[in-house]
View 1: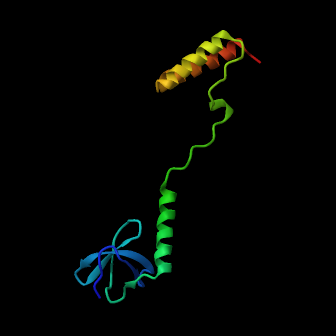
View 2: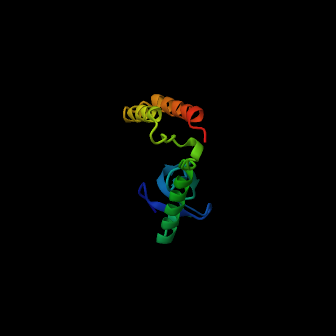
View 3: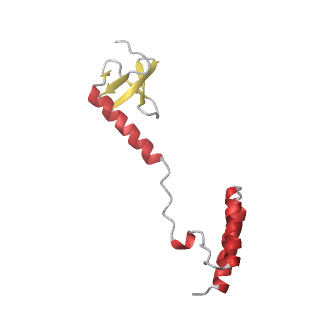
Length: 128
């Protein structure tokens, strides 16, 4: 039986569904759905994958991709949030405006500097 590249075949020796790539000597070369290392299979043993086998292989590939994605960063705690200016304090307002200008200009270093200065100011002038 001849197969076209890209067709999904079931290999009973490995109990896996693979994408047909080509022949290599007496074997057919299969690649895991979603990518990976090819393997050799006996061309007399492989058969077209059933709908259920194709679906299962696709789900496994999607799950593998999802596991390899970077996880979301942890939520910010209060200490890592940008400080809020104290209402009515001109120095706090000036530093908050400096931070916002830096943020709009995508100057993360100046934004961080403004946050540090605002925290220092609040510790020295607004101890609560």
